[in-house]
Figure (cartoon, rainbow, N blue to C red):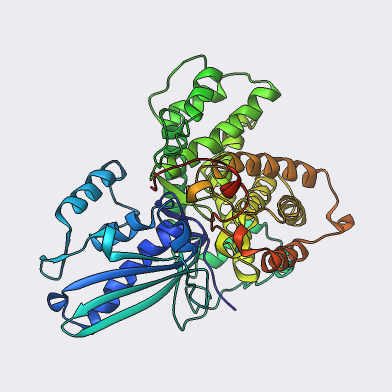
Length: 473
């Protein structure tokens, strides 16, 4: 049984796409390490990257070329200075070389050395790529698949968990989670924490969860304090700052924590609270679209749902929300995501947007239910309700940019998650007609039946019905 950590589902990275940006970035990093074991890097004379399937069709709009270039330049998505990315890439375009081995320069031009094989798809997954290094007369190739959420699988591997470990409470389906929790008298977060101790110490778990929350907070704050137009040529205006400023009557807070306290200090009616939820989701995904740092939750395209729902609870709960509450929320959300990863997909290129916004909404709904006092069964019920009402959602980004309709879809996913949690908290899971396992299976069947043009290719839906002429990202 695959063992997937919560921290595999919630990764810190750079936008705009986990499958098209973070995944290829990680694939190139992995390939370079493997290449170093096979050859002397000082003897490499040329490097080329070939993209296939969805990576080729929407790679420019999703900035795959930028991710690949940054990886070859030695940058990591967790630590790269996001405010310097464009300057770094402009310098590469001017100089047209990268450094390998002992700092020796070799030619690399993103315009000619990244190939977009739009008519060809590799067999294992829609997001395929091939890395090629030339040493003398020999080419060393590595084929990888970005399978969603920043997960990478090498050709010949199976799409399984990251570690061959034996968890104390293994779960492949959500019904097994329910059984463990009933037997041990656990909340979901208790079981997840016990499993996470297989990989990390108590202190490491807490520190990493708080790091994730810090990145989410900073993304929310930046998104609500930055205006202008999103890159890529669609001329999409950033809206989160305007909404936030209007709701706060122009009052400005100096940092994320002060901003949260400012929101908590005000009295907002239902309509205004609804605006805040949408604003939070817009803020994160406007940052994501601008190559900002976000948490893949479970993907970058759906990165706004989970922080927006958590921020809603932090700002509008009657009592002050503790770090312990936040940790529980993140652990539950991450765990629910693993069931979709194991039994279906979290890749829009395989399952449409139901695999991204739908999954993130289910994760957020379950997590919110638990920290609002719901039972384990009610949390699973909330996840089922949220996904049930995202079934069949297509992925049709205009011009391959993670902007329209992607950004607004995060707002809709967050609202649905909150409503699903409210319904589950008032419901009796024993009377439910559909289980979470049922809806995951249905989602996977729907994904397999869905026409490929609705799976992150920009060849169907809004992507072909909106008349815009846009230069690529």
